Image (cartoon, rainbow, N blue to C red; front, side, top):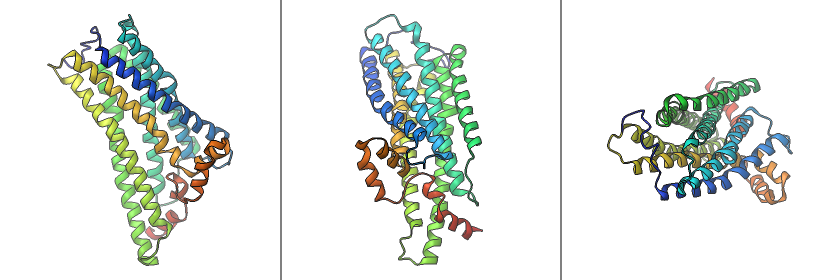
Length: 323
């Protein structure tokens, strides 16, 4: 296939491809929407008055992006690919699918990058530094402006070139940032753990060691999830653009699978961020009795994966030590 061409756009996708994409999109819609809407509700309502922070506002931005995916993008996928499976004349409406996909997915991926940046700044700064509300608002606006503008390249360059741009400007850069942040945060918390052992003795189990374990585990899960979903998607986009001998069957399968992998990652975001944070679990417990069990479980665990612990006494001790 010649790079930047839209070969196979006028060829019907295999029936199995269309049915698979429609079915998986329907399942992801059910998995994505309720949890993310609950996250938005918890932050806006804030029943425990403890969710008003820059980090949680970025979580809200991510939840809005993922909710958009579940409410708009995935239903559009179900409709389009169901019609495609029955060979209804919807090929001229592909732009609706592409526009909604690239806008919502770009906003979701960039929101992950913003969350990681906020945590990185909080953990590695010498002083107790966090993003201000104005910085968070500016970052959120920038994310949506970029996400809203990028899909319009489809009308100029076509799907395959736009997918290539999306892979290189959004997915690969975010993946590189997550790896960089993970290494730096791991080293910083490890240094703090060694300091605490030297000061308090090797037998101590002070919170610093627990913070290191929990924070590193959380960030590692985020990194692994993003990598497992995004790396194969990027490979498929490269194959689509650069393979000159690939059949249209393979192109259609790769086109839809790279969609679905990014959408799967968006469905997982809620469980990697808000649902692992103590403040959100307590808020969920106040919002509806069904989540009381989550609230009670969180009370038995003193560590969350957000800035709640990262900005506490342990980081203050670490910064004093390093100064």
